[in-house]
Amino acid sequence: MQNISVEPPIIKLSHAAILGLKRAIELKASSVEIVTDSELLVKQAKGEYRVKDPDLSARLQELKALEIELGEPVNYRHIRRELNKRADDLANKAMDQGTGKLSKS
Image (cartoon, rainbow, N blue to C red):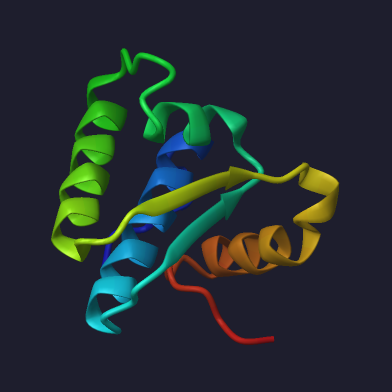
């Protein structure tokens, strides 16, 4: 498995969104909301901001392909970082462990 701890934050966040959508597809979810403290990711995923970085562009193209595969609309919502502390702590713990997977704690 790829160690995502060395990637830039926006790449890490897009990777997390991709993993979430893949899981939603596996679960045959009928409604998906991606909540993140990255306003940049939300605006890029919604197509409100252009993406210049080729790596990020590829990730967002994968995200859009997964949205199509899901067959349901995906809602992207920004939340202030201080309100996202628990998720941030879990993500940091997973990255520190080098797994790229969130652990239960």
